[in-house]
Image 1 (spheres, rainbow, N blue to C red):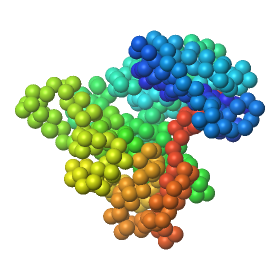
Image 2: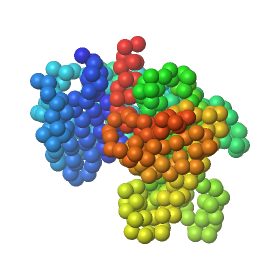
Image 3: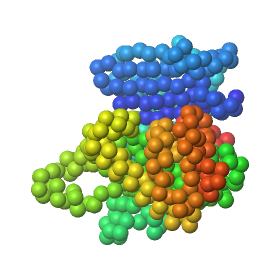
Amino acid sequence: MSVVLVVNSGSSSFKYQLIDMTTEQVLASGLVERIGESLGHAVHKVSFHADGPAVTASQATYEEELPIPDHTAGFQVMLDAFAQHGPSLDERPPVAVGHRVVHGGARFFEPTLITPLVEINIDELSVLAPLHNPGALQGIRAAKAAFPDLPHVAVFDTAFHQTLAPEVYTYAIDAALAEKHRIRRYGFHGTSHKFVSEAAAAFLGRPLAELRQIVFHLGNGASVTAIDGGRSVETSMGFTPLEGLVMGTRSGDIDPAVLFHLARREGMSIDDLDHLLNKRSGLIGMAGMSDNRDIKAAIEAGDEAALLAYEVYVHRLRAYAGAYLAQLGGVDVISFTAGVGENAPLVRAHALETLRFAGIEIDPERNTAAGRCIRIISTDASRVTVLVVPTDEELEIARQTLGVVDA
């Protein structure tokens, strides 16, 4: 049995999954949060007992509140949960620990065994991802203390997009300044885009190398990627995850001169503008709410601001879909994934509504039918296959981690 522990760390929390890679089944998962606060919170869910039968989440969920001063203490809380509630790590010992790291810059093209030098590089890249890389590094160091004898592997969100061509990742600014500060388009959500594009090809029984795909990863953060033969050739997020689509709280694309204008007329500082675009924009900025379900309910209640916000959101989806159709020279498969992509049939239908000229036809019944598995939502006559593909970034991290270990 090959068992991998997957860790996704932030500055004050981390999530984890223990996955049996023989069956690709989650044995247990959990969340340790509010690290560093007066009282932390931990949840541990056992989804598979040592004796074999699967259990429901409600039968196997354990929660506690206790002080968790740092990530090292948090990992001890996780280890205690495994010891008390199972599965036993002695009976199902992990062969490796896989870590999600948001930003690999231009240095990391693939999953990488974590060495002291790799840690230094992740730390140096924190300047490009100050909200993400420091937390990942804290988690890596705590995990290495908890599992000192295991290989630890970093899987980077940016790695999948390292296949972007220079004309795609280069910004049209002073070249020397861009090189000095490593300013270029990196792209994000790469782990999800890779998983979904490969799952789509496998589901359709078609070679990945022959498919032109567009993948919409639509959650509170949102991105779209054009994938040709399994390679990312264009993606909406750029130097940071702020570029591209309208998101829950992020603006996506905006004329940079707007920032100059606000700085001059409102006296807004760099930090004010950063907060505006990342926390007070997108759906919440336009409508006062960031959840697509709340937007839908508000529209049904006659809220004009919510309607406009939704129309702006859909307009941006259509704009990127059309652009990527042109970049790919046509498309074979379009997939929707993540919270909104998997659960909002109206968003899917409206995003592709104007693309019928390209042979894209959504089947209304298939699109609105409930389902948690990968499924086709296009008509049989559609020249482009449209799918809903539930993403599984943790499984993808585990696969890549095991690949490094086995190599």
